[in-house]
Image (cartoon, rainbow, N blue to C red; front, side):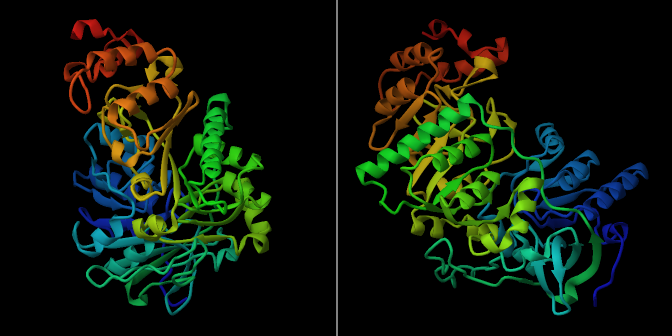
Length: 497
């Protein structure tokens, strides 16, 4: 290999206090595992010596514990974007120790190419292999690796021998021209290739290679329960109704699905229903449930940014790679989440909410309006450009102490203008073509938990006048009551009259 082989500790020495540092991957997949741990140890030593040491951390989406976890615990992160899913990072963000700015995943690469956040100093990329000309085969998650490699002054590589070499050929690396020179992205079907199976990195930028051997794969999500299965059944029933009404072509349309137990339950119900035709997926992450859909023939093709499989599923995937090689393609985040392509393909989007209000606005990021969970991720990239956008969530949380349907969301991520359908285990609220009051009546009757319907009806009745009736002094009464008493059902609207 023409590049210097170095230790993770030696690699960390290339990174200085205040540096803009970018990491490959999307979710834990494709994310570096050795250098960030050494970097966290360096930060601890610098702090013990009385010296400041923090970096500004850029990624494709969430990372792994080696990146967000280790660096957050070492107090080594100043700024963070665009998305995270680590408990330690979340804690630091909500304590004000990390300056986190939330961002749509499709936007980061272009903003960085226009130098919005300053020069990128170092890119740390995990690859399966690289040749002497700088042609790298990436791992199971791409994220923003192409743009990071293009912009960084220095590139550090982790060559992970634990990544199955059969992954070669599953990537489609394409970086669009920037405005005003951009042309159409040449993806007209989910399985169209737009770019190259390898990422070219300027060899002159590669200052060191750290060899690792860490198998890919993680823990599967918890199995579906009665609530998530009911949500899945309701999503399935809605799509069947759209098929029968002719609002979805008989050949169906591509699907996007978020991550987690609800998403898995929805996909399982689609797989089990013989009346749902086979379909393609144009999405940002595929999980074990998608592998099952491909195996059953229900999913013909899946375009994604990341293969977020469990350890068992990823072994099955590569053991049977000849069956899957023409059915899965990984793209950079700005392509997997690209609004132009999503709108062109007519993608039906399915995402989850923390809470929804009675007028169809969605909060997907903040608990009680103040505490960040993970970030907006790619949900808005898909929602705002969907053929039909669906949001789902359980009607209650914490055993009924929290209603997911509230008078007004405590934080707004997706306005009612972008939300076509809201689904809980209670039922389906089709919001298309409805006025705000009609939306409220539909959501209360179809989606709210019976325990909270009387309170929500009371709020709507007391909020008279205007196109979107609200009683502003009572709009957050559910949240105020929960903070004060730990139970939203104890809300007393009479004191606001």
